[in-house]
Picture (cartoon, rainbow, N blue to C red):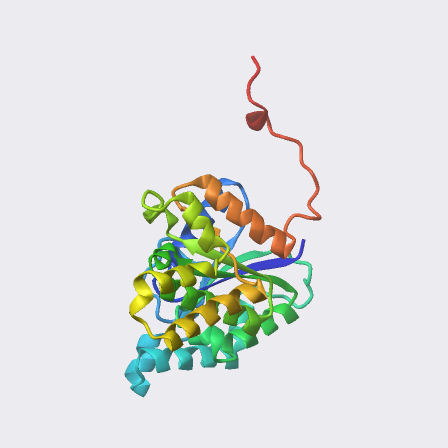
Length: 278
């Protein structure tokens, strides 16, 4: 099967760690083996204990104390330090050069500083290193569902997602997280317009709430939304962590992207799975 991994990305507060915890629990319930790697030097606590933790190499707290860096600069320094010490990553992932067909499935929880995916070459370097070690990678970009209450926030998030897709050049699944928080407030048909970003949302804003804006401002926002639509790269899968079917549907998309299970042999069902006919 080979090595597979999910690179879980997105801005701070979008539910990346909650997604990782939910997915690990779901995989465990499905009798699927997976390991969690924390790649965030600023992480403070986990809902699901990681198998390996970058804080064993470097922490944001130590960098801030010793070098006097602020949160953003310190996080960039930590990730650059990781890139300079890729042997730690190899050890953390238990990479053995002689076992290139190792069947590992990793969930990698990444930092929430968006510049790491859109501006700096740091995450790209990590992706290239993992690929050279035989990993098939799927980027999982998280954006919270509350963004759909504001067209500006939503299309800004779409631009960030598209930028990460272009920068990293790996199979990519964009996830609309925290749908469980808004599902009782949003009409499903209205939600669909955000899952496949509809540029007319910005047109409607310009004709309604945005009547106060100048024509130049309206034109800019409409141009951005139509740019996203013209590339047809960004779409979202909704995630409701309280719904097992929602988690499974997302996992199926990611498994397809990394070709998980294509060479697995079929197994006989157990007596428990068959049920007791007596």
